[in-house]
Length: 72
Image (cartoon, rainbow, N blue to C red; front, top):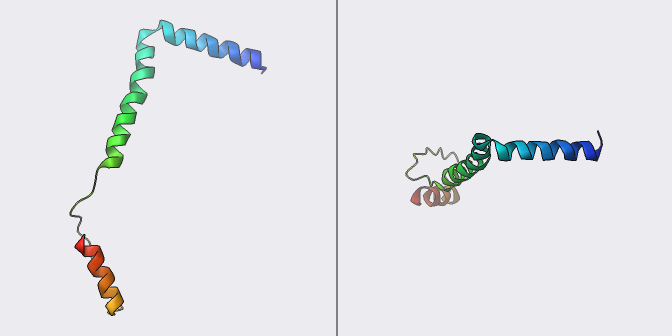
């Protein structure tokens, strides 16, 4: 398929979207809504998540590491 054919199809589709109001609204609203939804989903902070730590090393370093993890 040549570039002219692809360009003609793209222009036809753009004209179709501009004429059909429902499609135009869908094309504009859906990405905008998803943008806000994903931005909210990625900025939610986790707080007070229960964790379990099994310290096989029982060294001062491992205890200090566990203390740092559980302190925050």
